Image (cartoon, rainbow, N blue to C red; front, side, top):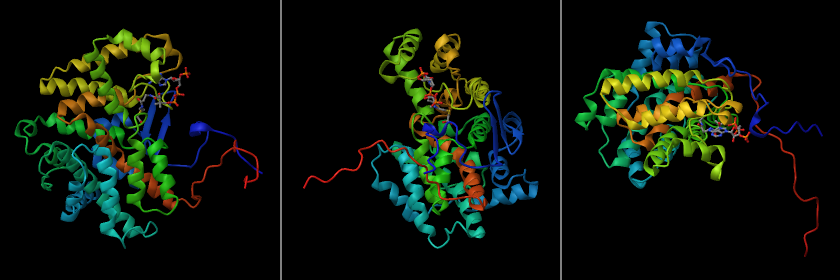
Length: 388
Ligand code: CMC
């Protein structure tokens, strides 16, 4: 009795109340704790936004200073955990490395993982923010066979991360400060997006009483799929294939419209944004600025713009209200920064981490929280007798 409506993909079902992020999909509005994404992207930093999402208000300069110093103090990984990476093939996808190393990281903190202990929640918040970028950089280094570098805690969050990735590639590390700012801005744009698939996963896992590391690790796996965070990697692969096949943008768009073998225009469409994605607008401007600053001319950016132009004037995309989403131009920027394509979704994960933490913490303190347990409509065989 009491079975609820069938709602594939939870298109019409709210699973929680939340005070963190507001989205109006028709109007193209995104706000964190009430602040418009455009203002945060222009004036704020990733760590300030992380504090805002997690604690609900902008930090005072003292609070932000202490938060930053605390994160810098916790960047080191246990030496034994570094050996964990050696057990994996160098061909391992960095997203798999990231989620498994994060699960493994929790084993160093057994006894301090209790989701109901506020002090433990605080320290694990700091540990995650400090160490996930280091694990991410090591996943990168592992994939290209280079030595792991020690974090340099005299540097800001993004500069430290860039150095961990490129510090022993002089030609790449000696780079324009525009890159640090651009990366910071991209992390801000990804920092939360209410109940998307990975955040819902973090909440579902957390609702069982699982610790923050286990919940975030599950979120990373949910993010890896090409319909979610994996789209930024898929966009670059798609652009590369269009260029290499020589088939031309129009022909490719025709194939998308005919749903040829399920081919989709990656980086287009969104479950909630039906007119435009406000993040995509900012990313598109940033792509031009970063490539200009680097003096890079990437034909894939031209191809992406051509593709966007053709899709936006086509009835198929107009009728379905499909517009570029945040992932359409991010890959071009990450590529220009020197990240390999398979690192793109890892960068998304670092960006989304404060949102996952904020949502997990909100869930833990919400008196209405129950273990997540959807219903189903059974369509299988009626009762029958075993034949022997
Ligand atoms: N290319 C071609 N057709 C599409 C696309 C696309 N990218 N997206 C949706 N459609 C079509 C779909 O085939 C369907 O057509 P029809 O009505 O003829 O059956 C219609 O549009 C509605 O699509 P849907 O799959 O029901 O929409 P959804 O809300 O379930 O899916 C989406 C949203 C983002 C998964 C989807 O638009 C998509 O697969 N986009 C490409 C992957 C992508 O860029 N994902 C990143 C999302 S933004 C970053 C993030 O937060 O994850």
